[in-house]
Image 1: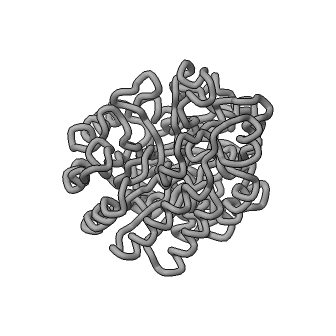
Image 2: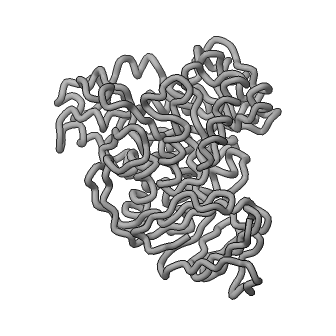
Length: 437
């Protein structure tokens, strides 16, 4: 692979304290050097980066559903990673609630094989906590780790009992793996389909209180303190849960957390408008009240929240085009995340651009202990080139994802993706951003 020099962009690399005009030299799929006015050797390809574009470590989405094996009508590893690179992500970590469940090395190896065939974004499988995600006995965590899993979770369900969670946290300390928890106290959740509040009541929908999330989070944070294990709170939605995370961090528990763009942008008033009972606003955890949304924005600003993840959850049109109660939870998110983050966080003054890179790259790499998160010499040449001022109109029809279940269709936003580079190879280029790779 020949050398390529990216010249002229604003480099934002928080892990190395860089934010300014630097050149980035790639050689053999790795970062060779970052500096000002780097010399150009014979045979080096020089790519001029248009003014205003940002070069940063490749974005990593640590919460994605690729659906394969078993649900290929919704998404495959190939279509999911195509969606990822179009969204600026160089790597994704995929949840285990496939069919069969990723609770053994055979399924993990199958996913990695499909990812190698697709040859787009890097894929990091996440294994199940319990066999079959049934909440009865631990999966073979050592086997999952050897096969390539970077974390464990029963996502879609909480870890069923405190004792099972304790054992999972104890075992994962041996491998420095986090347990990613879908926090939901099942008796409080019941058969709810939306946030328990005015809007659900007005529409006759069964509610899920925020306490269903926070109570389970408190249990797991306490157990992380007991075991010294690492717990990561997935798709946090409620202000009470953020309080629980802050409590845990103040007591030095190994707790981290993530939020999704739909939870820091939307609120439960979307249940009734602009379209009542729109199943594209049905997700789990549900959209919460304005006070919850505002608390999440504050947590992003003050550093309490570690990661932005999409919880990309593709569903076939026929599955979503039913009564609200019967529709599955979840929306796609890989191709809308960056634009929503720029428009609602950076341009709104909630977070700085370096802080956004921490949330989308540095911290996911650190929590999962995977390569990436920096443009250090010798690091993989996984790079996201972002266009902060690009005018974007979201179109689900043009998305690379196999499924189109998004509430953001038609939204006009400021900021987007110019290009995605994985291992020194351009895997996505947005012609509208004025870049040639």
